[in-house]
Image (tube, rainbow, N blue to C red; front, top):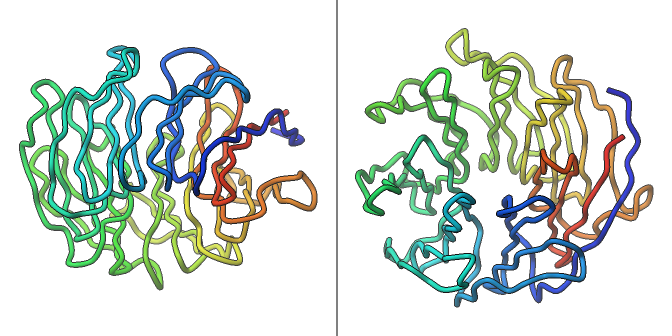
Length: 299
């Protein structure tokens, strides 16, 4: 895929850094949240609708669009379940005074990673926790689920990646990965490969078919890699960084295809924290410490 980059819109209104994004309930919509504790639903740049307000920063959330239910991780205040249609809180599940960095879904279970190295498994059919277990004494920062292998990868601040069986959560592999915290993980290429990134600014590629052997190391950014996503239909990986840039990579040969930055594309002026691909709309979203969200067309 050969493409150019075009900024479509800039979404403003948050009063602090924007840390997380997730798909909305309808076409052209998405949710954002961050340091101001606000959860906002967007349809267009001038149509942001506040959905919820919590006391502390929100680093992660997960939407169940068919149910109009949004889970938000309110740091030190537990998980909140929000009815996005009625804009009201339905449930608050305390987890102690922890920060939660990532939420992923496996069938009807949510997996939550926290800053003391624990993973929490929540059954969304009855909204009860079914398991809590410690992966490390350092923060669990990122989760990726491999449905084909029935495994999950978890990146930690002890610089390691741990691979767990999703049937029983038994540890299968421990990867001596980065030279600092692992901030993001993403399975790609039919879930046969895993890519990781973190504070050391390198991308590392792992071959799942061969016991997660390290296949490649790429010095990808100048500063920490905050997030990685895989856009399957275009066979590309996108990475965002503390160095203020977004980079697009060919997922098959891992060659750099495009750099999105402030000088060339009027992109963000500070750390780019989160990316989201809206498949139905075929647009890329980026959220930043500069309190804005940008929407990009790749063509």
